[in-house]
Image: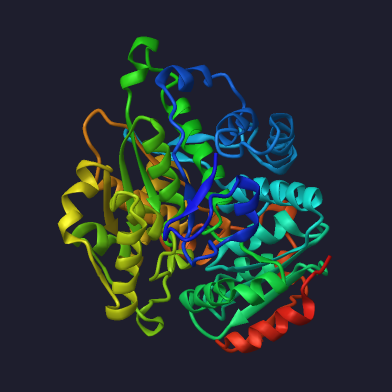
Length: 476
């Protein structure tokens, strides 16, 4: 299995190489040269596997340059029971007769990003040791990516992490999880701006090939395909668990729909790939908050990212994103995997601030099964309250966005899964507003908010960021 760039200017490369690169050398994103396919019989044969075993089975189709026994060790270590609260790693929890939550927040930072980052930490350490290379991770976070990456990579040999976050745009819990780490290889940088400004800085430095090579830059944002491929696993796992009670003769035709709270389009892109591989997903429903650029795109066919000034600070802050990096991978598929058409679309975006794909709009749902919707603060509060009153389950505001939009896309006889985003303890204010319940910290994190915090504040300035990284980058 080799990987190419959406923009056509990169020589095919193996999985290990694209783990270290982040952006492709031509500024595009790495995608599989051909997507592996799985049959209903193969999926059925995975039913009795544990989560680590299923992860090895699926990832072996992408990481073909990593020996199978090494991959199995990585997934055992990444998804070891001591790292996750739930014994099954990813539990399914029914909240009513039609909707179940896919529990992706059982890991060390209580957010779904752990599902990819724990594997990526193992994979990066293996590749770096094998190649005797250093890697300086530069990333941007709107909330949970940063802590998940830092907890997965803290203390690892040959790796430093430079994580950008928007000043004042994360919850106190999210800030404390990141800024309280005192490992020498972890560097938190609070940028004066919004998430999109942080993401633009990451792209600027990743696109500067001389600087990137000199300082061995890579990324663990969802532009890193290692994250996308490891997120595929829980789509297969969730379908297998949802179909456990279905008669064996009917399973091949059994479909579920999945709603995904979305910001940077990475999580739902994994669902798109799983569906394209052959997993029986009926609909993939994108749930946006007030920063609903993606909802507008899937409703109108016009993608028009907003400026930093037009990006709202909301009560589901991890979705406060107006320019979704991973959309490029979907548009690549939409345009027939034609790098010239893709490059032309992105030139249009650079020149006009928008991409008009209204001619392709009928295919969004008919061919790819993609639908969307928007949720507001009032919707989040009402949804958290109604789920608690109906099931006794407390959910976080991003998951509430998902449940609200999922309810608008239910179809008779088709179970709906909603991907859980984070534990509600990370967002106690909105949970209290919705339910009157005051959530304390989880026992193992009881003193988190009291710990000293270490962060560097910085203006939105690429030159200053370059200097900061150059002085602190790990070298071999």
